[in-house]
Amino acid sequence: MNQSRGWEIYPKVMYDMAVYLKENYGNIPWFVSENGMGQENEERFMDKQGMVSDDYRINFIGQHLKWLLKAVEEGANCEGYMLWAFTDCVCPQ
Image (cartoon, rainbow, N blue to C red):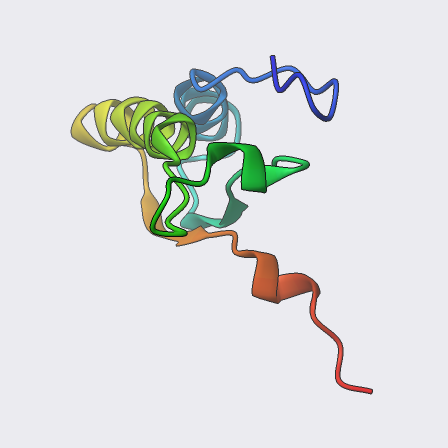
């Protein structure tokens, strides 16, 4: 659970959806267009040098990719993966 957002985190969804597409839609080509997580008040994870220790995010991405790669190894037709970044939400003034 992402405590700062109240969102469930379920990395196996990558595998579940890949298998679903394979079994129900003829294994069409597809890709993950956005995957990532945000945290409110990330400064609480900042060290004395000003670097954010974001092991929580590394773990999040790693777990999702683990399940996605398992699905691909089993024949899912995933053609790509794009990581979400905070800059996706930046709009020029």
